[in-house]
Length: 70
Image 1 (cartoon, helix red, strand yellow):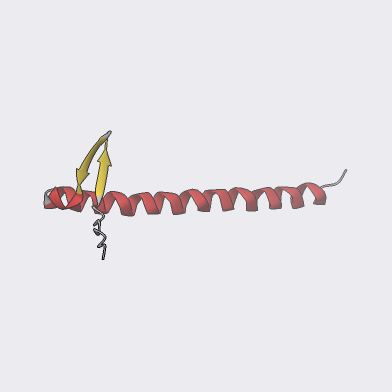
Image 2 (cartoon, rainbow, N blue to C red):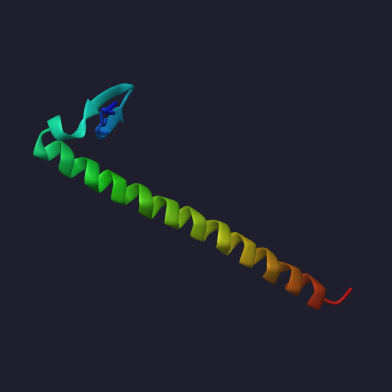
């Protein structure tokens, strides 16, 4: 019977073109990575909100233009 080797995925972080195993990093680096990941999520949320606000503004500009006298 043939047994398969299980490969364990390693968490690798890429920073400025270099790769680092997350488990090998100092606690300070892990802490910073956590904050950076959270900030990237917030930035993405805000970018999506800006797109939504721009779309809503376009709708109201259209309503305003159609309500103006010709």
